[in-house]
Length: 291
DNA sequence: CATCACACCTGAGTGC
DNA sequence: TGCACTCAGGTGTGAT
Image 1: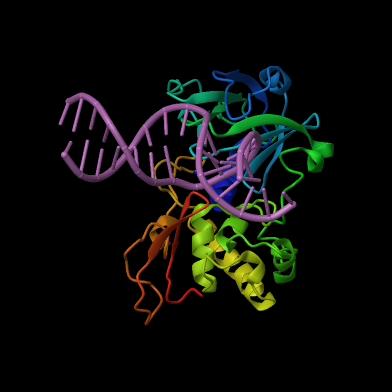
Image 2 (image 1 turned 135 degrees about the vertical axis):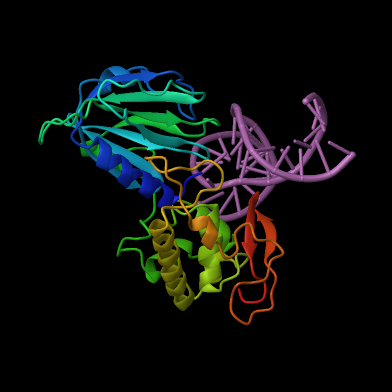
């Protein structure tokens, strides 16, 4: 499911609901995700207060008040959503199929007292390609899942020069290189196709053959497509929803993804969008205006 | 090393 | 309606 804009949208939604609440109960219904949920997961989290929620690449990071960080990934089909009872003590919806972990949270600890009777957050993942593991905040950069990640595409240190250096010498297609989370962190199958279209670069070009100028253009295109997607709340293909259940709308703004056979949206271009398979993933592009 | 095919798992969609 | 088949937003592995 989720690439950077979807994970960032969920992250922001969760932060608004969870920061400043205490985890009063954590129930793990299935441990066998892509990596097993640690046996002491629930015990380690119970009683902790959520300090902050952030994102690195496609990982969600939930910082707790004891130096523990929950490191989460949604894989292809994972969802995290908030369930809030409409009234204090009102019954929450029953746990559904593929709800693997349920976090029960207290009312906000600080601030004006209110009728908020707490809420719960559900981790749901039919395919179980996602994961939920634990890290240590003060040593998070060394965490095995995070230490090899490349630059954040929306950060100022992701430049054309950095991209050029990270793909130097690579003979694989630029499409495949951009999916490599060590080259740039957070892109997935949709946004790679969309960014290459905006940069007018063919996905079949050898990554190392891009000029410095092309790398600079590609960096700009990556930023623009991610920012546009963030503004739309991400893309909803089949099951992605934001933390509060709202759906994203960027799928309506795709220019090439899943548009095989349609006219190239670039003004005056007579090309037709083509679908090819690279590294076992579908790639969409206009063979006329992407060179 | 770099590259690639494939596996992991479930559900949705399609065509017969 | 049912069945067989294909495809899907990700990533780690083993073979080459």
